[in-house]
Image (cartoon, rainbow, N blue to C red; front, top):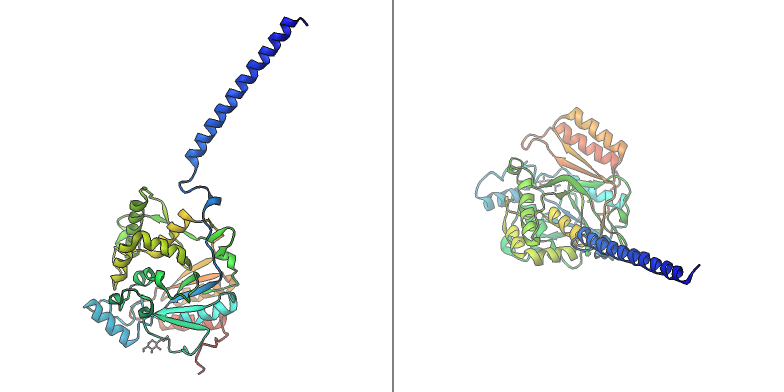
Length: 365
Ligand SMILES: *[C@@H]1O[C@H](CO)[C@@H](O)[C@H](O)[C@H]1NC(C)=O
């Protein structure tokens, strides 16, 4: 090969590699632009903060709405009798708490402390000297005592940021209509590496104006608007939290309270639900998914509505006993004033079959 040809070959090679270099650097630029655009606002999943839990407690809210004192104070506070019906199913007690407490011992013995938040009431079957289950009265943790008495679960939950220090930083939250139906493990709720387990409902906010005539949907739509304002986004697809158990942490409650203090105070001051209340499970889910590491296990909750149809309920209870879901929510849909007593008896039979082991906190009689 002549020397001149050799020089051409070298020049050619340099030219080709120059183009290759240029192309690859362009590709890198394009790639990084693309990465920039697809990067979630708060960074990738892995650099999201992980919630820390030393141990996990259980917190219930419970009320006995048939207690004459409770009825009186409800009537006084509302100034009318709309809220005074003894059977008003928002306040009715179907013995759910009694059996739910039994279910912790049986299916979630790793839960450290059990707390019941109530309006200075104890259930008649409960022995207050128990050190396995402790009560927290509203007046023990509300920062503004003028907000009491309250009959509004939104208000009760909006004060969770100031629960007594003895309550763990991480806790499972049950209304008194939820119980464990099979063994559950910590990782159904939280994992030190993956963060918090989340359970979303298929509902998203906001629902139609029609739906929002229901106050629960209205509170969620209202809370969703607040979030869009503070985060300057237009999110029309924010998921509701699944109806059932919740998992709450103080870290997120502190952050929510810092961002929305006036709203927390307003909700706390409403003795009955209003369409402009914060809806805490929805708010919490929005915060935890935006700022913290989360994962979505297969749903563990079974939801059923208790209705006056006895035959239907017998089948429903049999189904639950056969399926044994990890958590069961039995929502009270019985008629407000004349619940079918056959269904109420059937429910107790169902509970006694499922969870016959009495707790040390139950009065012996
Ligand atoms: C609720 O209060 C009523 C009236 O005082 C009482 O008869 C009933 O046993 C109470 N229920 C529970 C679970 O404490």
